[in-house]
Amino acid sequence: MLPDELLDHQTLLDETDWASLTTPSGTGASLPTALARLVDHDPGTRAAAVADALGAVTHQNSIYEATMPVALYVAAVLSHPATETGEHGQDTDRARHRPTRAALLDWLGSTAYDADDESVAAGERSCGREFLDDCPEVRAFRDLRPVLYCAVQPFLGHDDAEVRAAAVTAAISLAEHPALARQRGEPADRARDPLATSTDRDKRGRVLEALNAWGHDTSGLENTDDLSVRGLRTRRAAERASWAGGHAEEPPF
Image 1 (tube, helix red, strand yellow):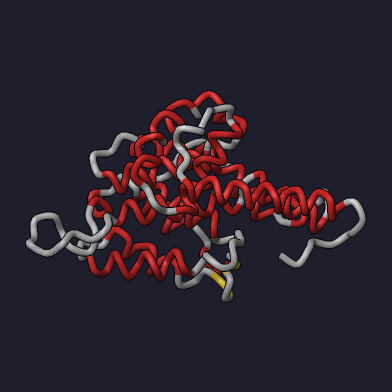
Image 2 (cartoon, rainbow, N blue to C red):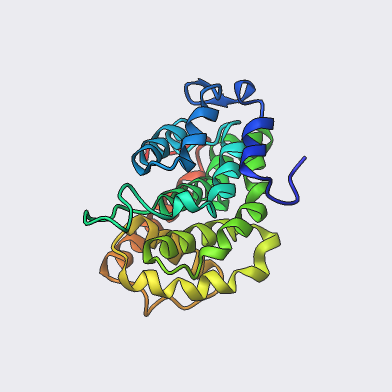
C-alpha cells in the first residue's frame, strides 16, 4: 500500500523490515544504522552517512526493494535541522562544505531520473512492454513520486543556493508523475535561476529535457554545451528508432 503522507523518519526506521529488502550487495540489514547517522549532530558523521546509506542502494542506475523506504526516509529528514549544514558548520572559520540537505536532494533527483518515462521506454525497448511488470521496484518508486515531491517542494525557494538548485532538479524529475501536472509550474519557473549559474551538464540536461517536454521555450536558457548534448541525444534517439525496426535487442551503446 502506498503512503498518503510522509511518516516521521523514526517511525520509518523502526517499522521497516530492512533485512527483508534487497540491495545491490544483499539485504538492507545494515541500513538502519547508516540512515540514523544522516541526522547525527556531528557533521562529519553525516557526511560519511550520505555515502554509506545512499551508496548502499545506488548501483548502475537501478532501483531495488530497499530504494523505496530509503527514499521515504531521506524525504522525511529533509526538514530535520541537522541536514541544514555540511561537513563544517556555518559558525566556523573553515570553508563550509555542501549542506547535507543538498546531497539528499541530489540523490532523490537522480533516483527519480533513473525511474523516469525515458528510462522505462528504454527498458521496454530492451525487455518488451512488460518491463514494469517485471520490475516492480521501478513501478513502486514511480508511484511514490507525489509523496516525495511534497517533501521537496518547500525547498524550492530555500535561502541556500545549493539547496535551492538541488530541490529544483529533484522536483522537476519527480513532477513527471501525471498526478503532479498542475504542480509543474513552480519548479519550471524556479529552474531559470540554477540554469543561469550551473555548469553541471548532467543536471542541466535533465532540467532542460523536462522543460521542453512540458512545452517551455528553453532557447534562451541553453549554453553551447547544452546544444551539443541535445544534438547528441537527438542523433542517438534517431539511431535507436531506425535500428529498432529490424532488430530485437538494444544496440551496443
